[in-house]
Amino acid sequence: STVGKPIHCKAAIGREAGQPLVIEEVIVAPPKAHEVRIKILCTSLCHSDITFWKLKDPPGCYPRIFGHEAVGIVESVGEGVDELEEGDYVVPVFIADCGECKDCKSTESNLCSKFPFKVSPWMPREETSRFTDLNGETLFHFLFISSFSQYTVVDVAHLTKLDPSIPPERACLLSCGISTGIGAASRVANVKPGSSVAIFGMGAIGLAVAEGARLCGATRIIAIDVNPEKYEIGKKFGVTDFINPKTCKDKTVSQARHPWYKKHMLPVESGKSLLGCLFGGLKAKVDVPILAKRYMDKEVQLDDFVTHEMKFDEINKAFELLMEGKCLRCVLWM
Ligand code: CXF
Ligand code: ZN
Image 1: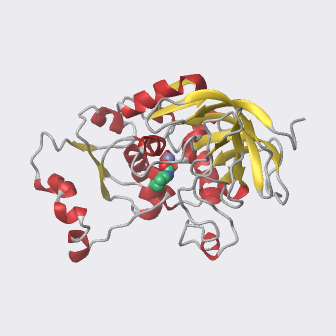
Image 2: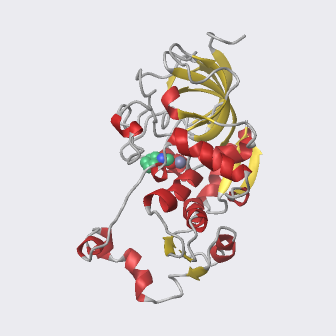
Image 3: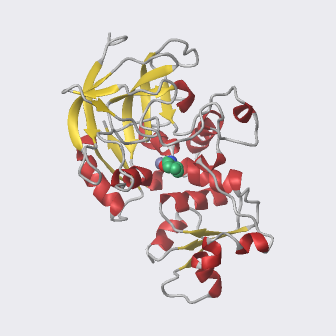
């Protein structure tokens, strides 16, 4: 058994900002108290991986293991972990759900106050790394997940247990982007049956917002995107109308780019609200299993988000595809 011992496995290491990731052997330490070591089954790419990988100013933390949209199996648990055991099927989420603090106990917030969201290069509780390379150099974590590795260590507050009936290549989508979009429409905007919804930008998140609006019973779902191909794609997710700002001079469309909107003033002054959210306002441990069940019940549509699947070793190809806007979600098999 590997319990209590370091594990050697393959990981994609970001050694320099914007430079191709390098597949190398890494050493993953056993989980400490309240931590869980998981074997990643698959990971998908989210645009945040690219955003942080490109960051030069201020410089990011390197060498680093990126990746935060994934699904895996519990290999071993650290001291004090009672909610998970070896063999459990888990989805990591970048925001914590400690279940104990005022915010986790309230239905009003999904922002844990015991482990507030931050972009940290460490584990959330014991602020150190569990990864080293074969030269003994410390490798930094990303969004408390670092799923571009065959094994990773994640705090129990960042893990949601799922029924394994949902296949891994679909479960991983619920780890970040798709949940975020569905939650933004259903939980944050609280779309009501019969309403009209406008969505600016039809990448995977925008399409997931459409999906969320459809699930809420919106009758008009208006997609706004400069890429005309997004209309046909959008229809699969409930889009009913399409506006291309490049070919349409309508005033309402230019509003989204209006300087007043950039300063976030006009909507407020005219009695409108502007809301922000992380993870679509969803609570990781409560809402992700519900979405998984709704997928299994054929209510939630996830299949069409997966435009590409490849082997983990081809991760740099997957980065290229996402940067070129040629893919919604690319699932990598470990
Ligand atoms: C993002 C959310 C916004 C801040 C950076 C991380 N999470 C996932 O993609
Ligand atoms: Zn993400």
